[in-house]
Length: 120
Image (cartoon, one colour):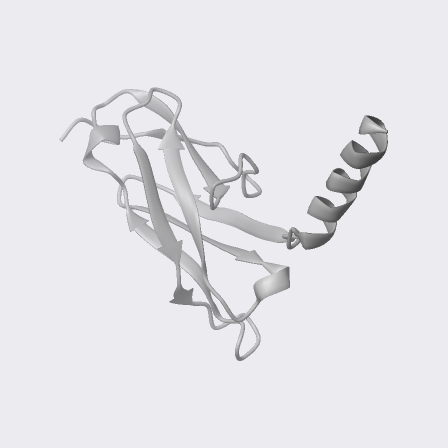
């Protein structure tokens, strides 16, 4: 009997949880900017948050990917991001920059990307 209730609870939670269909990419990581786009195909008219971090734990930030991308269809354009490269990564040491979707552990394509900039 407990198994039936557990199964029913799992089925109901799966039915009520909205499905996400993430897509995105890091276009470029350089000593000036981190650039790319991220979206959820189930909410194409809404921009989503992304999380940016590095392997060394120097950076852990959340930003909204809401910059218009002219190569996207009208009504689906506000999914770009251009973030100034965090000063903590401009220390002359090699880093790997990661970008993931919202609160998930799913990363955009081409993530992580290497970054090595002279110390400033």
